[in-house]
Amino acid sequence: MRIDIISAVPELLSSPFNHSILKRAHQRELLNINVIDLREYGIGQHKQIDDYVYGGGSGMVMMMEPLVNCLKQLQQNIKYDEVIYLTPDGTKLNQKLSNSLSLKSNLLLICGHYKGIDQRFRDQYVSLEISIGDYVLSGGELAAAVLVDSIGRLIPGVLNDETSALTDSFQDNLLAPPVYTRPENFEGLKVPKILLSGHEAKIDEWRYEQSLERTQRLRPDLLQEE
Image 1 (cartoon, rainbow, N blue to C red):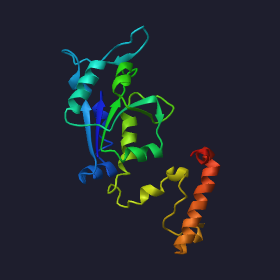
Image 2: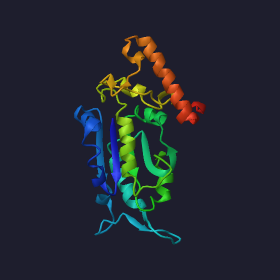
Image 3: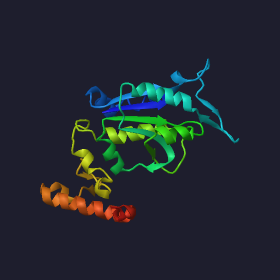
Image 4: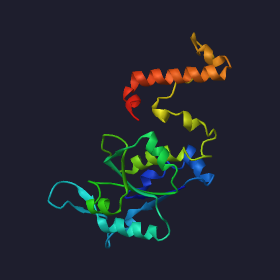
């Protein structure tokens, strides 16, 4: 999979993709992440990428021309399955959406900044708008990192144990069951006996029951979703 990211502040993305699982995915040539500096497509001597809001008001808006020029150059060599804009008013990111996007081949993410991007670009070129929550960030870079991480770990071969992602929270609209590791007894706090039984079917049944109970208690809304 290839994921390109257009950013006004590409330095914000240098760390998330150079460590842990995403670094391993890149080394295994399973996930190719490219961060494009929008200022390279800026206008004039000062490489301008933003301007004042039409109609008045505070803040600046990312301009149409640099974004279009950047997108068109990228599209000369790549056909994107989705052009995604990270924005608070987008579709709320969930596991189902991450699962779907992990099956794509080429994604382009656009990180908003300032007051956002010119609406005409959104209308004309963006195919999917995604929000990671009901709050506002300084820019879309951190949201892009969250999205890439949620997608990348689902790509076959990225995780050492490929079944691990299938048992995460929100798969099948259930929260994950509690997990334990050694020691078996820590200061009187013991691991549930069923997990030490070696009876795979009963352990699976216990985990499902725990997931269901935890979901009913903490996130009953998930059980109402299709």
